Every structure is written in structure tokens, then in C-alpha cells.
Length: 464
Image (cartoon, rainbow, N blue to C red; front, side, top):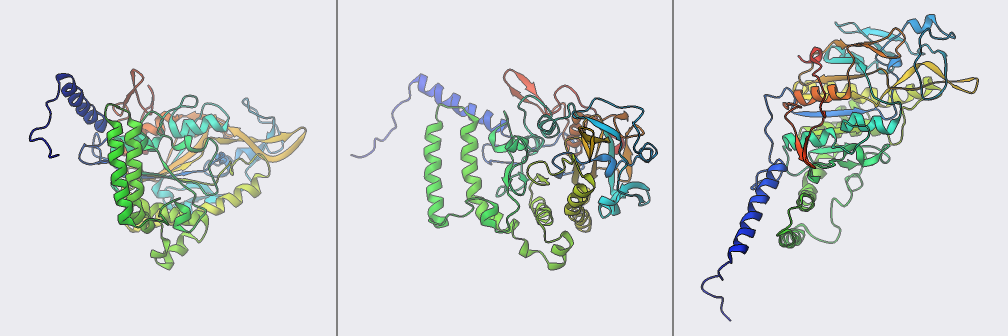
């Protein structure tokens, strides 16, 4: 039977339904930070950004600030003696515990840095050290959520997801937000890079960077059964079926699923190139080091130069920096794994002219106590969790290098001068990326949410 010359007339109800659905999809595309014609189109910053991309070194477990970037010589004066002032700690602590590591001043700024990060310290004039960070509680899980998602209790989108929502990605063939953690997930797992109530397309993509083979770095990157042309036809059919299913259903999760299929297909060519370190010259691979953290740091540079917006580099699964005992051996080993890759990245970015618009963040979820942790009446030669005051540092895009913001008391127990909250840190990061933290909002459950909740002040002293 031949097709009718004219399609059947739509009823008024059907016409309104279809028209309303079309407007709804336009609204959904806007929420996703996309135009209807281009999934993943670049968003517009609120003002000219100082940084276009970001790499975040997360030292999981809580590195000791008094052993890395916040020297406290007065601890030596009180060695083996009780500190004149103490605060409530999670576990029993004892006498003052001077750092077993030597500090030295570096650069024109003369900022003192521990021997643990002697290579990173060569770049201290490009680094702003914040010595007055504070968390809310001395526990890993809530502090990880606070530093990554801005809330220690409730489920909230991560920093990388907010950046993706606000700015989009510059490469349609790669995820805009990548989280690399060798050997498995950190504490709280994928919640550290979750999109929460933001559209699922903005969630971080996890990569187990302990592997060197691209097919193991990214699961199912290639199909062993279907050629690319056939796979494209299968995907087109799937997209048609999904589109039909979506009719009458305004659910961002459906769109996120469709986008994930499309991105996975496009990644088959782009990702194999981005993660292939054999394309780098030997001298550069040697600069970063042929280690897990050397390789993942070099991959991070390759990703950001291809338009990936935010890369988070985790230092190990579990809590490797959680040195409750024998901190001298443990911190020395851990720092040796990342000091050279960090220094290499700073040198590499600078030589390529990329450091000026790439923001680097280094830190953990809290610091550690200046007093020694005890097991009964015996010292464990380690330090307990300390959320009262600790250090992070930033470098690169928009950062005033060679500066120090804030301070802890003379022993390093608590922030006393210009304390900085996670909301302050996040507000500053968003500002450097061209986003006003008070204007970057998403309406959910009847109210407008933002990364910094109802708080957050810019750390102006570290902004160039």
C-alpha cells in the first residue's frame, strides 16, 4: 500500500504534547550546558578566566603539613615535652614531635620547604602556599567529601563536575573530567568525582592508572567483535531507540546515558592517542619518571593539552598518606613517588607556555598533629589526623607565585592567621577559571544550589 499524500492531522492535545516536549528538551539542553545542535558545547565563563584547565594532586590520607610546607622549629624546643597548648584529637597523642625532615629556603621568595619535596621546591616562586586550611572534622570520609564536593555530610556534586557544568569540555572525543587513581578507588570511591544532582554527563571518568596498556587503562575502549563502521550503525540504531523511548520522558539520566554511548564510541580513536606515552620523546618520559605516578602525571599533561578541563591525580587507593606510625619512613617513601613527577609537570608546562593558564592544586583532606600519636603509653612515631590547620598549595593560572597565605600557631596545631575553608578554596578556584561562585547555580529540589553553599570568600592574596 502506498503512503498517504498527507500525514494524518494531529489532535490539539497531541500537538501541544509534542510542542511542549520540544521546548522541554531545549531547556534540558541548556541545563546540560549544551546547545541542541552540539552535545558538550563549551560554556561561557562569567568573566575572562585566568586559567582554562586544572590538575589536582590529591594526597589521599592527609599529608603532614609540619613535615612538608609548614616548618615549626619550636617543636624542637619542646621535643619529648608536653605542648603548652593542645586541642582535642581523634586518638591519644603525647609529647611534641619535631619533624625528622630538614627544611631549606628556596627561590627568590625564600619560602622554606621540607627535603621531602626538594624538587618541587625548585619551583617555589611559581607556588602559593596556603598554610591555614581548615576542615570540619578529623575523619577521612567527611573531609574527603568536603574538599572534593564542598559538603561533608550531604551528597553534592564534585568540583570537577561543577567546572564541567559551568564551562563544558573543549574536546568532544574525550571526557572533560578524568580521575586517575592507581590500584583501585580511594576512600568513598566514585563519590569523590560524583555529579550528584547535576546531569550525569558531568561526572568524572575513572581511570586505573597502574596499567600501561590503553585497553586496560580504559575498559572496553575497543570492541573485539565489531568493526568501527558496524559499531557506528549499531549506535545509530540504539540512539533511535533511545530517542523513541525518551518521547514524553524529561529525564536528564536518559540524555546522560545517550551521551555516554556517543562519547565511548568517539574515544576509541582519541583516547588511544592521548594515553599512549610512546608518542612522547624519551627524555621527557625520563623527566617524569617511569613509575605509576610519573606516567599518570604525563598522561594528565597530554589530556589537558587536548582540551580535558579537569584532571584529578590521586596518590594511591586507600589512605597511603595516613601515617599514624613511623611517619619518617612512610612520608619519605610517599613523597619520593610524586616529588619528581610534580616538578617535571611544572617544568614541562612552563616550557610549553601552558603553566600560565593551567591551575595546579596540591593537598589532602586534612593535616596531622604536631604531637606524637600514642598506643597505650608507647609512641608510634606517627601523627594523628588534624583538621584544625594544614597546608595546600596552588600554582599556575592566575596564581601569585612565591607567596604564603595564612599561618598556623607556633606548633602547627591550628590555623590562627587568615584561616581558609574549603568554600574559600573552591570560590577562588572557580574565580580563576572565570566563574563567579555565587552565580554558578543549579536548581534542584526547589532551590538553587552552588558548590560553595552560602559561604566562600576569595583568597585574594594568592591571586595575581
